[in-house]
Image 1 (tube, rainbow over the protein chains, first blue to last red):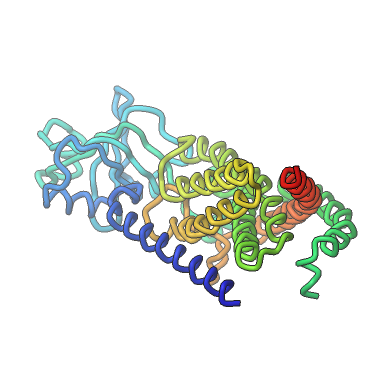
Image 2: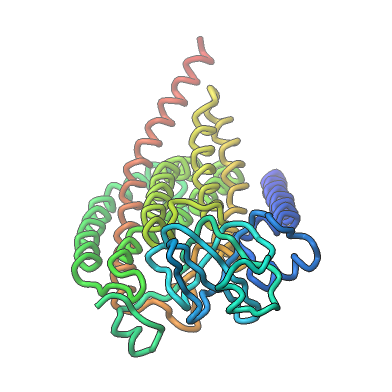
Length: 163
Length: 241
């Protein structure tokens, strides 16, 4: 019986050691474990100089309503917001099917300084924003709600695309 | 009652009686669930028809975690009490769990491409499920790579118990960290965020997969018992000669 109890204690202490070490590792690497930064986090890190111009990061949030536009070179512009701070994003490429205004989105790319060369950017943020985001890839993020279009319409969960 | 799960012959008898029933339930529920999920469930307001991958993806994801906890708990009882049945059940369940984890990863990938716009990203949820996949492979490889099979049983059991730390990480990864993967839909008790017409096929498919797991588990358990008998005979033979 004593031997059996010893075994249980050994297994429990093994589990404790492993879980504490995993916790410490994930805590130390917490900036790398998270998949994307919100606009507020990015702007905060920019002000602390933790993110400088040209760092490769992922920026996530909602596409601001009425911010999407497209120019003649098929370059697209939109604003990612977390309902607190906003960052202007430029992108050239194929957008995922779920992409639309108000939808969750994650952009991977580089942070750039605003050199007053982007017409759209200066329209949205006259003389106030110092940075914009040059996306290399755009991923759509959907939420955990699943429902038929009719229900979504009656709940007014934004626009629905399937008739 | 307690002896039923400990004496190999007893559990073998019961499993012979139960296995056709599990096979029957699994087959009927699979037919019903597939019919529901393909022909009698609504499309999603955002994802359209692609939401039907959910009915394969989510049940296999749940089962991959359920089977891993089954494996680890059996390994624990095997290690502490030395029950033969516990070791055999653990070894029997590992390849089934590995299969469900692969189904989960592959269907998730196929779902991710049209919806998110990528096959794979290294976010916390996807990576932790990949780690679960490697734990299954590690367990299977470890339990078969010792000439002394009792030693192999012991070390692979310890490995599987370590792996249980990964299960809460998988479960809460979508809540603690920013991930591309969306948070849980079902376990939110406050408000059900999945429509009832979509919930029913999901549950039916889950039950079908669960009975399929139990059926294959019984078949593999009987095989593992026989393999163990052969191994013990071989060991006696080597010791005598």
